[in-house]
Image (cartoon, rainbow, N blue to C red; front, top):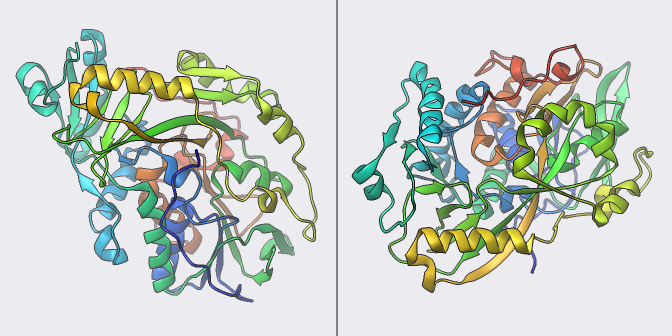
Length: 443
């Protein structure tokens, strides 16, 4: 069964010869960056090897989530929420954004206390949150039959439609003057005197002084060919959508065995609350030392397997010239097969928790590959050794909701204005300057 189909975005017929900035990658991060830059009056070319939003940007859960983020991401996520609140009017298109709250349930008192401990990170920002028990929790999750102690509810959290959002933002970037090019892989960066001077695409060259890499799961491969070490691995998440369900919960719900959110079509998007698959590939060993703290912290949530991806990734050239057909052109859209076991377990847990789903059916299932960094927060940074080259990637499953904030911060860095938030935690050099790998603390 193929993955979800994002709203189609027609490509501009020809690549421009000149641009101020070329953005590589037409997912929601790249589209958001392109929109910010174009609205600031820069001439932008947004280049996507496949179709706009066709990989993880249309395959995620659709959550716009502040709750249970790494505290380093909270200021940026608040910027994102402010942007989401006006996104439909800003783009002139529907993104499906709604503020409905997200409930993080706690199966026992210890987990409830963890919710309470994490919520203290919201207090400096004066963000409303609620710690629910008993009747208040039952009212927030009508019809549930879960055995839980309570839940954290952050009312400013919400949802949007992944198949709508990235295309809407990319089209708005075009309205603001950007060129939007699909099936136009960027093969490499051209340099003059050690500075970015352009790119070579499969459709020809574009002269520019700045390049933003927003390539999602492909970012490490591209950066490596440019001599830039970007520690990033891929994690697979499997998702399903249901047929329409009447009178189901409006707030999104997270539990250990499932997570769900209402869709605009009346159905629900459902996934495992904590289960992801990790394919063992050559980079698993190249990056083992850097990822060891994360592995030690999250091994119970990860399922490791040796699959065909080992051979597939081992066969990918890690170096190529700009006149060669690249892996980006041979693999237009990553469309992995979902884990049948994960999907079935999440669906069974959902139906056990909410009897309203017992008459629903699975309409579709799919999987996506998440770009993960060793500390599970993104890289939003200029590359120190290559002036004019910027990277925005590695959102570790948190990218959809935070995308408008990330695009704004990236545009601030590209245009050298006061950043909307402190970019220091997201610098690429944290992986090479001797800084320790710091994970979100366990509360």
